[in-house]
Length: 467
Image 1 (spheres, rainbow, N blue to C red):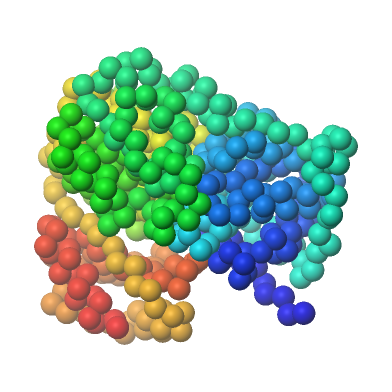
Image 2 (cartoon, rainbow, N blue to C red):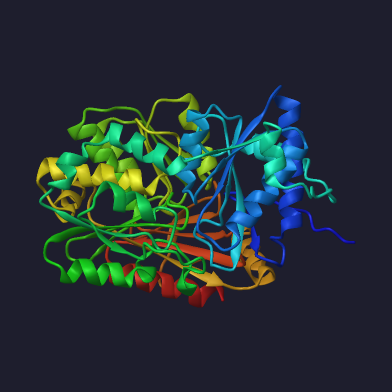
C-alpha cells in the first residue's frame, strides 16, 4: 500500500474528507503525536475537541483511541468547541497538548488537525515539525470502545464551552454590554462560536447560529463576499451598529459598521492598537504577519510602539507572544490576539473588545475607524484567491522569485520584500503580494490601494499579467 506523507501547512494538516482526511490517516497523525509526547513528557495529557464540521466527532474519537492506546491520557470536550476553547482549556486543565479537529475556514469538503501547545496557543513550528517527522506510514487502529479507556482512567470529559463562557464573564462586564446603545448582529457562519454570543448577549441578532456541518455549501471564512446576509441585516436595521462574524472554528474575525460596510482585519488590528494603547494605556510590541498593511507601522510609529513582522502563520506570532510583551498580534486573514488574553487568535474575544470600545466611548465603529484614519490615512485592501492547479501556481511563484515581473499592467513598483511570499511596493504607495496557499490549490493575490476602485483595478491588472 502506498502511503502519502502527511504535511502540516500554515496552520495544521488539512485535507479532503474521505480522500486523504480519513480515520486511518488521523490515526497516523495521532500516533506521531503520541510518540513525540512520550519522548518529551513523563505523563502527557492531551485535550481534544472538534468544531461543527462534518465527521468531527468520528475523527476526534479515532484520535483519542490511538492516544489512549499508546498510554497518553486524553481529556475530551463533550460538545463541539472553538479553537480558542481548546487553547484556553489547555491552560485550565494543565494539559501537555491540545488538538482541534477542524479545517477552520476551508471549504466544507475539508477537515483538519490543529496542534495547540501547553502555553495556550498554536504549537511552535519546531514542535510541529517534530511531530510531523514521527508520523508513521502505518498504524494499528485500536478497536476497544472509549468506555474501556474511561474505565482505565485514560479518558475523561470536560465542558469547554462553559469554561470559556465563565472566563469571558471575568474579562467583560456583560451587564454594561447588554445595555449598549449599539445593537450587535452576529454571524457564526454555522461554526463553533454559535452558542457563545447567544448565551452572553441575548439581545444580539443571530445569523447562521444553527447546526449545519456542510456550512450550507459555503466556506466559513469571514470575508465580505461570504457575509452578504449579515451585511444586509446590519445595513437595513437602524439600531444595529456592529456586525460580527467568526469562521468555522471561531478564531478569525470579520466586522461590519452600522452602514453595512466591511471592516477587514487590517482595520481591526489598527482599531485594537488604538483602543488598547490610547484609551486603556496599555503598551507592548505589535507583531504582524507579512501580509498586513504597512499602516500598522505608521500607527505604531505615531504611538512609539515597536513592531515586528513575521512569516505568515499565527504560530510565528504566538511564539513571540509567549516570550515578549505583545500588545496586539495579528494576520491579514482575521486571526488576531490581544494582551490580557491567551496567545491565540480569538474572533469572539476580539469582537467583544471592540464592542466594549464602542460602548464605553459612545462612538460608532465608523467613527472609531475615522479616528485611526486621521492618523494613518485612508486605504482600501482586497484579496483575490485564484483557484488554479498546483503546477500553474508554482510556476507563477517561481517566475516572481526569479524577478520575472517588471510591472503589473499600469502599476510599477520600487521595492520587493520576500519574508513569506513576494511583496511589491507600488509607486502609488500601495502594494501587491503573491503567495501560494500551503493547504489548498490556491494562489493568493493581495493588494492595497488608496481607494476601492484603485485596489480592484490593481487586482485586475495583476490577474491579467500572471495568468
